[in-house]
Length: 142
Image 1 (cartoon, rainbow, N blue to C red):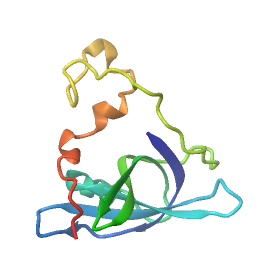
Image 2: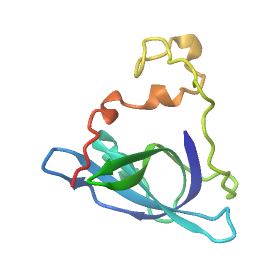
Image 3: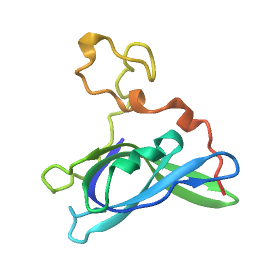
Image 4: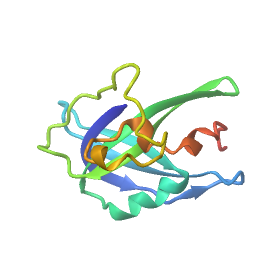
């Protein structure tokens, strides 16, 4: 898991492809380095409407995974957002961080299940938040 903070610079329209795949891209400008960086992220499938609640200029925190693939001898990298929160904290973005190897165990009920009342206040792991169908379609949509 990686995380970045910054301000929303651009929000694209939902793109639909003949295969039924949909994605939506957005750009966040980070300011924690000497030179601000514009970083493009994407959300896919049923997560596309999540961007409707955000606006350009708004501070956000993006949790994402790095996804790479090869297509016809060329290599592609996408930053796949799986969680987007309003607010950027104190304005200083931390360096990208990665979850410890092995991660935490899924909540009771398995991936995507609901945790019992006693553990509802605990923060869910990245595996709990991901939709398993996000990983079914590894084809490049173009």
